[in-house]
Amino acid sequence: MLNLDARTPDFPTRFQAFVNARREADSDVSRDVAAILASVKAEGDAAILDYTTRFDRHDLDASGWRIEAADCRAALGSLEPDLRRALELAADRITAYHEQQRPADRDEVDAVGVRLGARWTPVEAAGLYVPGGRAAYPSSLLMNAIPAKVAGVERLAMVTPTPGGEVNPLVLAAAALVGIEEIWRVGGAQAVGALAYGTGRIAPVDVIVGPGNAWVAEAKRQLYGVVGIDMVAGPSEILVVADADNDPEWIAADLLSQAEHDPTSQSILIADDARFAERVAAAVERQMATLSPAARTSWETNGATILVERLIDAAPFIDRLAPE
Image (cartoon, rainbow, N blue to C red):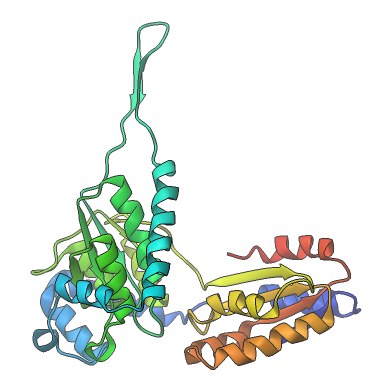
């Protein structure tokens, strides 16, 4: 983890090197994804079966291609009460936000008699990619499925990797909470290809949304135009500006919320108190023990603290870093 001090003579050079450091995936990813997508397009279910066996180490014909809605309802029913209330609170707040975001139709006639307007209609089918590899994120499922539900999308097809055939019960519970009943035990670039092209079992969709690793992001990039996508996401990152009045444990949790995503993620703290920055770093060390190994790799390889004289001095550094 890099420690920078804006008051030192070598800071401009070190900071510029930090900004320019590349955290992109291996260039071979693009080539590998293109090959995977070509196989899925040509071979359909057979390619999905093969890639799942190779990458997720289980046979779909044996473990089941789909996760049943009954399994999701059972996962929701078995959640600890506090955890269920947290998911329900998140779902309610996400729903309320997107209800206000939904655009209104217009239909009017102007002064010269021309009828003008716009009509908003939902797509017929949306595909949701929900990570399930290094870590699982029920929050991602809620944040992608609920806007589709609010918009009126009739078919939601969810894909999620299940290494060894296992799936995170929190993800299943979140799926039950929002009423997703079509869930495929498939992940990676091959899952994105299946949603875009369709296979013998999986029908194609109009839009694919949701986060994933470098292979998932690259698959979405290559398929844009064949299918709609939300965005092409780069390595995940967060920048926190905080003074000593903050709780170091909370700031550490904020930083690790991104570090746990992937080894290429980046977490940055800008502070005006060296002792506070040290307390945050110590809290990060404690909390990393409960997270995936990716969090430690991310923090130690790409993380940084930047010490400034005053917090207002952080503004140009934030602009230069342009964090996600």
